[in-house]
Image (cartoon, rainbow, N blue to C red; front, side, top):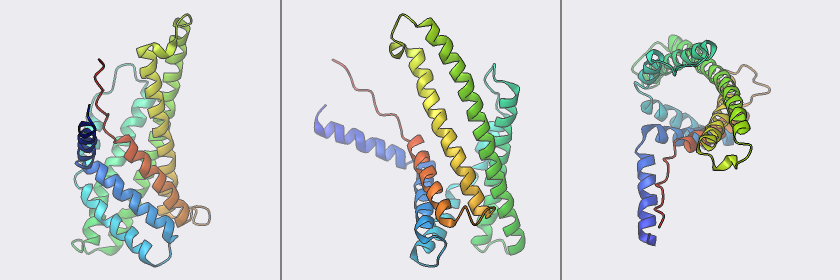
Length: 235
């Protein structure tokens, strides 16, 4: 491929990435929490960016609760243990509730919904739902990683006399394990971010700590949404 073809392909991937509402939301999220880290809760330009970006992100999440409602009623893969199924469905229900209530918060901040006290109460409830969904995600990922570890060890025993890294099934499981480990780290960070936003431990989880964890969590989300690069043709 010529340099122009490579550049065109790379720009095509960037366009494909930025066309996703989810990707733009996570980029805005990184800006929001990066600003929160810089402001440390103090008035100024960084705090203004934090607040304005937080409000702008809510537009990207309009009707997004439908996605998790669909996941809630969708069938699960056969062989999935009942505890993991229940945790997964709980995550869907909590995340869907968070996204739905978050729209009421947006209506209040936009000046459409006037009841300030109720909007603030629903905002806190929504954040508790988000924290609960992150806890469920953490437990699901731990369980799935345990299942993957057992299956990979069984596969390793069958591949004693060959290079396991040349086996497609083993490589696929290894990649899945890496993806779930990253998702586990992100879910753990989101729990800290939710605790910071709810001010459950204000002396330990300060606005700067919340901002730092939220920024890294956002970068992980951006990475997870990256499109797969096109496979190069071998001669």
